[in-house]
Length: 312
Ligand code: UDP
Ligand code: MG
Image (cartoon, rainbow, N blue to C red; front, side, top):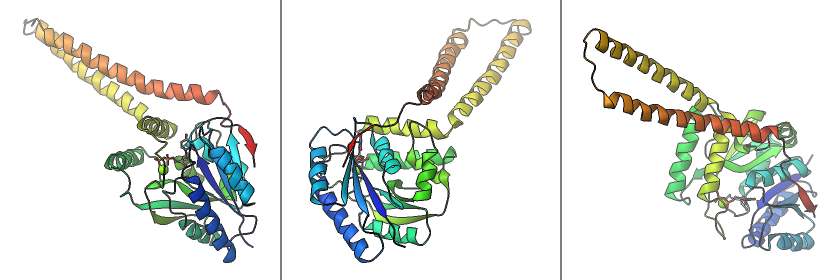
C-alpha cells in the first residue's frame, strides 16, 4: 500500500519564497512518486494565514498550474500555530508533513520522514543538527528556553520546531486536544505512539524576513510555559512560605530585643526594607497567578481556533 502524503505549509506574507518552495516541493513529490513511496493523490496544501501581500493570488496561480497544489485561506491572520492546525485538521492523507514556507527546513528530509513512516513510525520529528544560521541571540535564548521547559517537566524534543510528519492516527489524537491556544511542540510528544527523528541542517531563510519578531516569540514562550507547567505557581507558594518563616524569626527577634534587651532601635531599615521586599514579591506572585488566570479566561471561552474562508 502506498502512502497518501499531504504537505502542509503555513504562509504569512511569503510571496517572495513561495515559487521556489513550490518548485522544490513538487520536485520532491515527483521523486517520491517515482520511487513508489507515495500515492498519486499526494498533495501540497498552502495555508494562507491572512497574508497582506500577494500570497493568496500566488497560491491560486500555483494551484491552477498543478493539480497537486491546494490552498486554504484563513479569514485573517491567526498565527503560525493556528494556521498549522487549520491545515493538519482539515486536509486528507495518511501522513501529514508540516513545514515552514521559508525553506529553512530541508525539503529533501521529507523523503527520510516518509521512509520512517513506512517502517512504522507514527510521528517523525525533524531535528536541527546545527543552528549556525540563526543569530547568536536566537540560539542562546532558544537553548535557555528548552532547558527551562525541561526542568519544569515539559517533554519537548530537543532542537525540533514544527517540521514533522504525523500519521493519520496521531492527527486524530491531536484533534482530541481542545485547547484554543495549542502549543503543538509540547502536545505532539504527549500523544505517544512510535516516534522517530531525522536530522537536518537548518538553512537561512531563502527570501523575505522573519515573521516572528521578538514580541511574538516572547508570547509564544510564555504560552508554552503556562500551557504545560504549574511549576511557577508552586515556586510562588514556596517563596511565600520561606518569606513567612523569615518574618516569623524577625518578629521573635524584635520581641526579644524589646522585652529582654530593652533596646528598641529606631529601626528605619527594618521597617522600610520589608515593605519594598514584600511588595516586590507580592507583585511578582500576582503577576504569575495572573498569567494562569488569564489562561483560564482565554480557554474557558472556547473560541474557535480558525475560520477557513475558501479552499482550492
Ligand atoms: N507564519 C504564519 N503566520 C504568522 C507568522 C508566520 O503562518 O502569523 C508562517 C510563516 O509564513 C512561515 C512560518 O510560519 O512559513 C515560520 O515563520 P518564520 O519563518 O517567519 O519564523 P522564524 O523561522 O523566523 O522563527
Ligand atoms: Mg523561518
